[in-house]
Image (tube, rainbow, N blue to C red; front, side, top):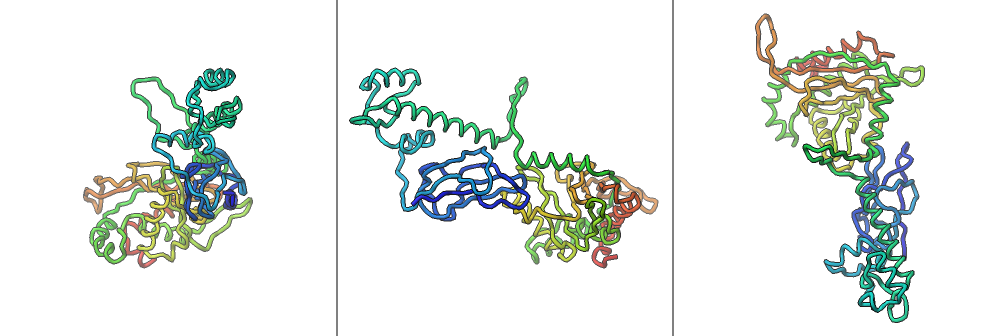
Length: 408
């Protein structure tokens, strides 16, 4: 029985998807629930599993094509078994349909064919032994040769589309004037769209400060081993910054608000977006009700976000919503930057690299682990006072971590 492989219902707000990669070839045996291909949307990667076991009889949509919910991607023949393919014939199988690639030809060479077939084979640079004949005694017809040529041309075009749709790292030879043009992935195009939206639809401004992380560093050094032993995750800096940011949002609720038309929407919950870098681009999964999470829960969730982002396993639910975001350019060595808002959020905190610098403390010059902080905000609803004091609250909580625990 033939079963159609269809594009599943796409997440809300996603109208189409791109076929990213087929993990099986036409003619391969497939098992129920086996991932057949990946669909790329502008937010997440979706897997399309086999609904039943059988053989992938037909691939109707090649990599690089745009599809919508309900479109037929291919066909599985249940109850069938895949025909064995010799190693040397594997390439031929991937280039032409199974009926043309696997059926043996009775014509051993071009000379045994009709004059019209010989002429066509010569023009196309083909050999009769490559093609299955449908004429009497297995002889080739002109239609056989044309069908084979068209199938090979279509397969070559699909392979080129797949290569273009999912380009690997750009490699340009040094000392040359070489150029390479690759299309944006859907997520990169979406990132570009949202960045322009933030720039053009908000009155973005950034305020800066610096924080002495000596107290946090000493606390981590003192408890890192027991923390990891107890909770099974390392004690990082991010959980301190999340908790410090929440204290600032509680003091200055407008930093946790968003704009909806002519209204300001104040949120009575704290869903913190954590910017995570992946091969597909920057994504911002959400810590739901972060104010109710322990330090260990925050660290575990962030580690999980990172792992699933690299494996393209984040879901729409992971990426939807958020009232405030944190981005850490310091992991890449950034000293200072201006983070861009993540609409409809109205503020974002930027972390940077930690460097030991001489600073003055109580009239003495001392060496301390310092970090520059940046808070970008939408000046339409957030005044400089709230932004500056909010960032100062984050600084004070980090320089005296007891304030985080005591919620001071």
